[in-house]
Amino acid sequence: MQVRDAVEADAERLAELTGRPRDVMRNLVHDRTVRVGVDDDTIAGFVSFDAERRTVYITQLEGDPEACERLLEEPVRFARGESMAVELLLPEHDDSRRNAAETYGFESDGSGPRFEGTPTVRYRLAS
Image 1 (spheres, rainbow, N blue to C red):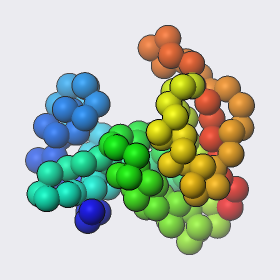
Image 2 (cartoon, rainbow, N blue to C red):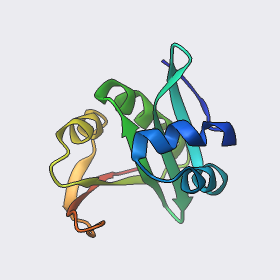
Image 3 (cartoon, rainbow, N blue to C red):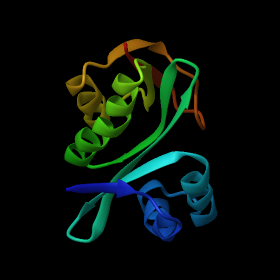
Image 4 (tube, one colour):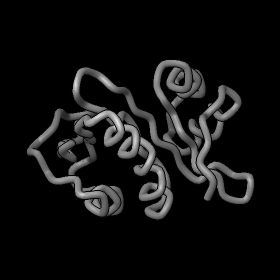
């Protein structure tokens, strides 16, 4: 899988992966750092993140387990280069993305906020 920066033309596929409107995904590409994982000319997943103060916040992670593992390398590499922590919120019972996060040493840091009624868990990777 190759990883590249997302471009506005990717918004349609990002919308398919998330079930969110294309306009929302287009705004995401403009407002966040977004990397897409491409297999055979098809976007297999993506990660979006922001850096604020001393933490990199992963705002979205989508794709199959292998894509998620590879895509997590992007914000983790950035954070390590800047000596920053990384934080990720995942739905409470999302085993595949949790396993991908734990591969990089993320640890549960307690409950996160609810999104659309779904409880989340906060994962953190220290700097």
